Length: 300
Picture (spheres, rainbow, N blue to C red):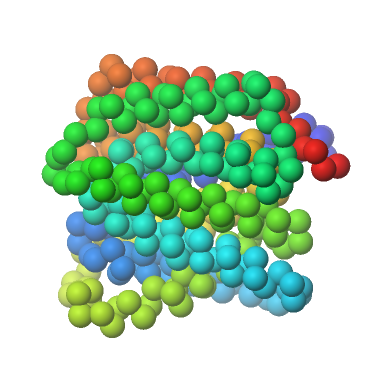
């Protein structure tokens, strides 16, 4: 098959993963309107886990190396466990749009971490592209105000920043692991660990169990489990397998733009001139980061 296909496919996968993750902020807000965050997170993990059971015959052929268990554990604890914990707290306090804006910090965190831990090197063009995209997000953030959807935006945005730190650790771990294990297997492992981690929280008295099946929240949970947890993570892990870590981070800056578009449709959030300008700057930064061979690796 044409090698150009394999150069384009990882980028398309990462763009689609970014769109699905952008939509997840809206879907989680909708799900939280009917159920406790623990129920929502556990539900999405359970939906994805049930899908992955169909792949068990293929997974049985995989042999996990003994010295990879610590890294697999770090991956699973970072995301979904701690990541979804902080993201749930974030979306209880801030809007979907504002929370998604914080995700633009992730490419810089990943880029600098990959330089230190993976030996990747960033050229000036790559740095300019990532910084430009981040500037665009800060412009979007200037419009964040207290509202019904964001009762404590500063606190919520702080929780989302903690989630991004967890996502950075997760990304570095997956980059190492995809050298030896299929992305689908790693995604399944995340879902299964997520179910085992969040299920015990249902026993807490402050976590009310669902009393009725609410159509919109239930649909949102199913969407989160299938489209986001199953497909988005699989697409992202595939992209990580075929691209440098610091280069994949550039696609994440698209998440706020997708979330803003969807939030306007679902929650009737208006787009100001400043938000439109910030979105265009994000796109420019991502294009600058991806259109050139600006990231190389010290390790051959």
